[in-house]
Length: 121
Image 1: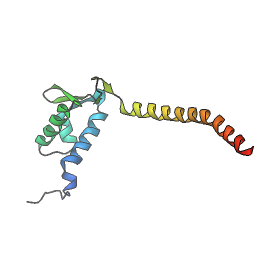
Image 2: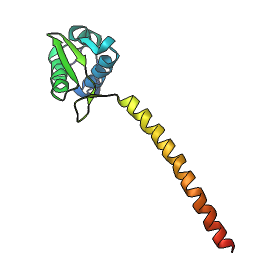
Image 3: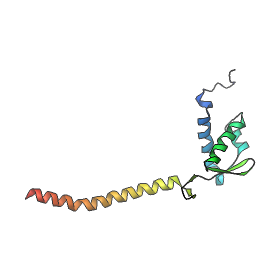
Image 4: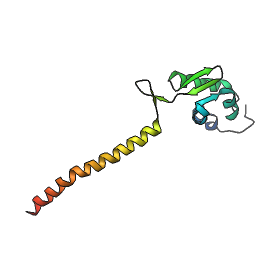
């Protein structure tokens, strides 16, 4: 029982297919993806594997079905039920961290100066 296209077990894995599927879904215009075209793009012989992926993603709130063969990416959901923009959040957190480090330096500089003065005496 060999494949006509000699793919490794990893290359045929559901995990890799899921990664490729989510990447395709995130690049889709307006997050809308036709499952038939996705199966063709991903060269999936068994559409059941695509449905396995979509059922899990729908169950955890990352996608929703628009109709029988079209799904839409909703993204990551926060505890209050709103979409969370992860790249935007990451950028905001990095900026906040940078600002906090600057603020920390402004607070610590007078302390360091005082300590140095105390040891000089």
